[in-house]
Length: 188
Image (cartoon, rainbow, N blue to C red):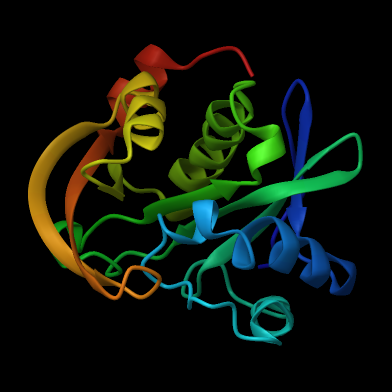
């Protein structure tokens, strides 16, 4: 199974390509205001990390490997959204996990919610799961609002080491049941 191209009203979500590495590094990896919210990003940015991410995505199986989509607006790369297979979160081991980031110039326009709607529909269909989980820093108000808008509900509080902050950070684990997603689905 290959990663599909997904379309919403304004966005195209597509598999990563070789030309995406520089945009990933510039908009995400080298911008501390983005990296600070990620547990896996190194800070300062490690040269070549974006190229490694793109290379790891070549030939993946989205049922067993993280499925990372480039979020594009009018052909311009604006961020990433991913669905990790079940098992990524100990607190929700039976659920695929949603993760995302958007470059700062593109925040505040509803693109994250729109992209998440699109990839969640794909995840529910592809994984045939009853729920999708996510993890968010407790003090990340913007991301928590996106997840609330999508219908995610808190299920646990945990701590994870955040590489950019060089310390453990409180995280809220949230879960979105398939029925709730279908009931609350926003027009994409």
